[in-house]
Image (cartoon, rainbow, N blue to C red; front, side, top):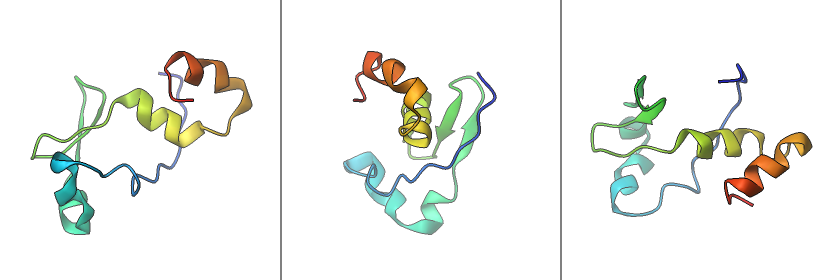
Length: 74
């Protein structure tokens, strides 16, 4: 919502049954952006919360630390 853009490394987040197939780059690359959910989704039902993606992209930003604490990511 704030117009920020960032890069997210999900390699350590692909744990559990629903994410296992996404370790294959071909499967991973088949994501879509769900405008209603406002996040990325895959055909197998996998998705990530948009605030989690935001956290991963900006976890080192000092001014956002209180927000990340509120969201319980740190």
